[in-house]
Image 1 (tube, rainbow, N blue to C red):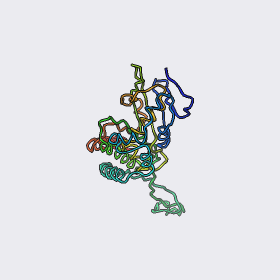
Image 2: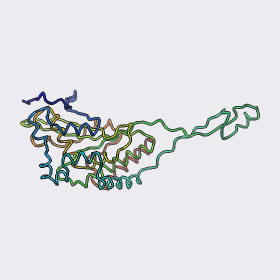
Image 3: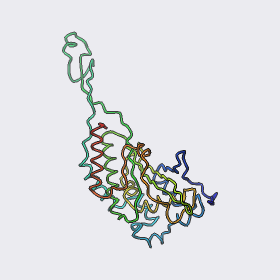
Image 4: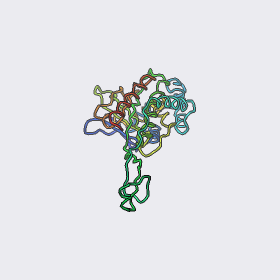
Length: 294
């Protein structure tokens, strides 16, 4: 039995009709606030969710040298070393992407001013005898890019750089093609409540960039390419918002169900940890663009 505390007024994972417990954050700031506590939906989970400055320093390697305070500072101003690394990788990947599609051209006729004269209408002394060619931009659509945030314990911090760079490169590429890009970070798990043998599907999503906002490369780099964000923010927030008691961990990483993936135009899974994997993902997107003409 869970001990729900009335002290918790924050967000919570809610079970949907398909049995999945889901929670969406509309910004990075909102999930950071949830992770900071100080309470939890289930009171016993507070001791698991809380990570003090001192305990983070003790687990220096696991949190890549960050504490809760220094990570919040990094989200406000991305460390130059991380920003430069992701930007350099992004630029390398952008070179492998197709050039933006030029807007289609349309000929406008029967104008009183223009670039070319229609001889027949001119001889008829029609004032609207001019024509011109104009570029007509395509109507923008929203391209939804989703990135799996899951990181296993043995992963090195540097391995995440390619994942963040790939997401940034694709966001840049689609933006240059005149599309609006939404960038979403996703955590999909098979949660294991304490004392129970039955797992529960758990999905947490965070909007890193909305479709109408410009890409903030620094914040995106920390959220998608810094292991401390996943371990100090995402996992801690989940400990506070699930409606059951947890042990030291939430559960096991799970692949996002196919039905969920179909909600997105681009899906970056948790296996983009090196240059070859990033280039393979870019190649797949290039082929998709060439097929669809997006």
